Image 1 (cartoon, rainbow, N blue to C red):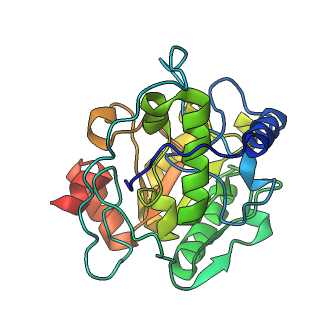
Image 2: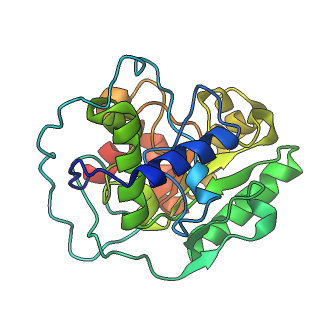
Length: 263
């Protein structure tokens, strides 16, 4: 994921973001950001309250942690596609904006959370959530496309709050977030208060998605037990669209998404 230098944000911005997070109903399991990235591209107050990954083992982290040099970043492949690898070692260009970004229909969004995805991802998302609803599951998107700049701000807020060493475990550095591809959505339900929590996994909605998302072209990027491979904590809400054929091949492979894309 892209280079991140410790950059002190204006105190007012940090305070405001943390206040919004506190008002967003997040539990102690999640704080400033959802998945390895956070907030929508709009930068609106609503998008600033995204949730974060489980802070297990983060209580002892401090904002005084020394920041090591950013990891070496492999140059992006010529032409970014929906199959481009985006992880801690592979970054997107800072100026990359996905084509055909469209708004996700309000009916498919968690209350108060706007979002955009590439057209093909929106179409697949709508089909998937319609079928989930038909099966009795109310699932909606809470976060979707995020720009490089939004992710940079988000990550810096995490560093200010937790320290660098803890921040890199729960949030992606700018350029290294799958959300910048415009094909990734964080999904949630009323069962977890529209939040982004590990406890979403065992809910009926979380189980339905885990069993069926690949048939719509979506992949769970950060599965349980694969933290050493993905670099991130388990995120049962984080789904990336890679197309139906590829998603089914991924499912059959038994690999994590980054392993599958790099093979």
